[in-house]
Image (cartoon, rainbow, N blue to C red; front, side):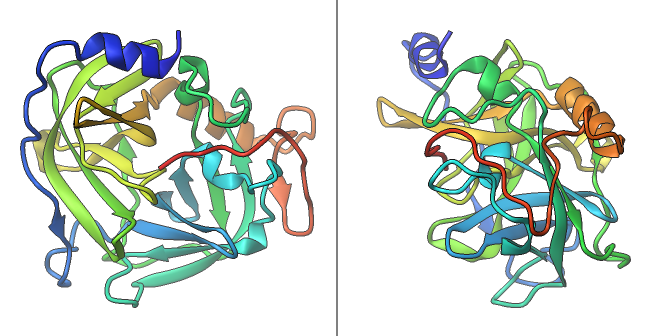
Length: 262
């Protein structure tokens, strides 16, 4: 089933308004819990959003790793700017290797549920981040319809500081895909979606796509838990056969066509 068809079917009735608006993280205090989210700059292409999950690993959307000609981008074109605010990052790191989910198929502007469900990737930093203000995020089980979530993102017209939407909601979940009413825009691909259970932010999804339906914006993300476990296992494997999509500096890997995403 195609995601856009699914979205249109799901929202034939009125949608609830988004629970809270975006707040720009302008000060050091505002950003205290969110410095592990950063802008993932892609030289000669643009940017996505990513989040630290280990001191040397960041999580983002797989489609962010592909160039306009459909090839995997060389790791040396990425820079992770953790906690970027007003042009200054709390930590800046290059990337030594990248890995999209092994089952992710980069087939252009598709909105197939299976594709979105695996639209995650890991990037290894060229140096670990060891900073008491920049802590890796844990992950949590998939949220259910009606659950409150939050999101931290960069995006068009808000590229120089992260924006926090503290409360938005899961509209529906199906086939490894989560539909949300969170406020995203171009550049928000890869943004972490958080559960705030027990007051500790835990990542429960990664933003993959968006849709505008009857004037309402829908954000679409992965269910994360099982795909991330598979991706980590693939990333940690050193064999060429089980980690065949890993690209290190100096390598290229050609694949499909252009992928339009937020």
